[in-house]
Length: 277
Image (cartoon, rainbow, N blue to C red; front, side, top):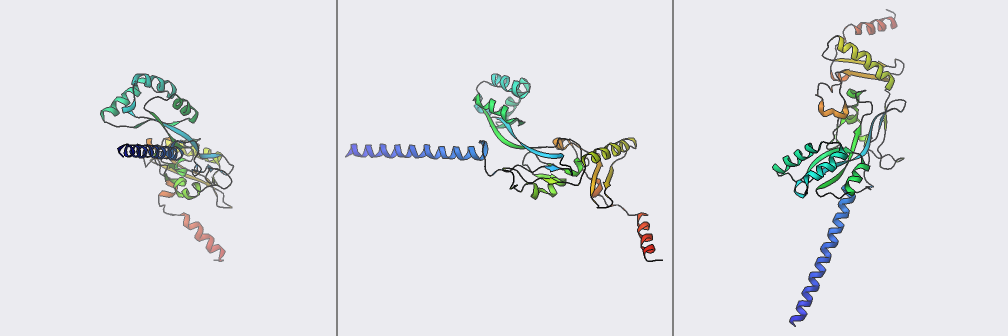
C-alpha cells in the first residue's frame, strides 16, 4: 500500500513538472513573438511622409536596442571589449555604465538604441551573459532640419507623435495600408521639397543677418491655395528633437495671431470696385 502511494506521488510530481515545463515554453514563445521575435503579424510600421513629388520627408525603419543586465554579467571587461568594438563605444564608457547601474542596483539598462538588426543578430549569436536585445521602430528624417517645424516629431521612447503633422495626422500614419504588409498609410503633402529648401535658405539668411528672435515664411500657389513651402526659424533636427527647446520647435506661421493691418484695405477696395463704387 505504501509503495503504491509513493508511486502515485512520483507520477503526480512528474506530471506537474511536465506541466510547468510546457507552460514555461508557451510563455517563452508568446514573449518571443510579442517582443523579441522576428515576426509580429500585428505590428504596423508608421507610414511615410512624402512631398508632392514623392520625396521622403519622414520614414520608419526597424532597429534594435542592445541592453545589459548587470547582475548577470560574468566578465565585465571582456564584455565591454566585445561590445565596444561592435557598437563603436569606448570600453571604459561601457564599464562605467555597468558599475554605475550596479551601484544603483538597477537590474537592466539600455546600452545603445537604433542598432542595425544584422549587427544585433551577430551580437546575440555570441550568447554573452547579461546581454539582451529589444526591437524598436526608429523614426528617421533624412533631410534633418528641412521642414522640421512643420513635420514635428515622434518620441523615441513610446513612439508617440508629439508635434506638427506627425501629431495632427497620427491616425492616418498609423492606419494599416492594405497594399503593404506591416506598413501604415503614407501621407503626401502639397509641400515641394526643393521650394522648401530654397525658402529655408533665404529665410535663414535673413533671420541670421537681422539677429531676429524668430522668422516665418510661406510659398503658396495663388490659384489653388496649396502650400508649397512653409518655414520657421529657429528650427531643429527632429532626429535629435530632445536636444531642442519648445521655442526652436515652434511653427510661427500658425502659432501666433497676426494683425491684418493695412492688408485689409486691399480687400475693401476690391469690394468697392466690384460694387461699382
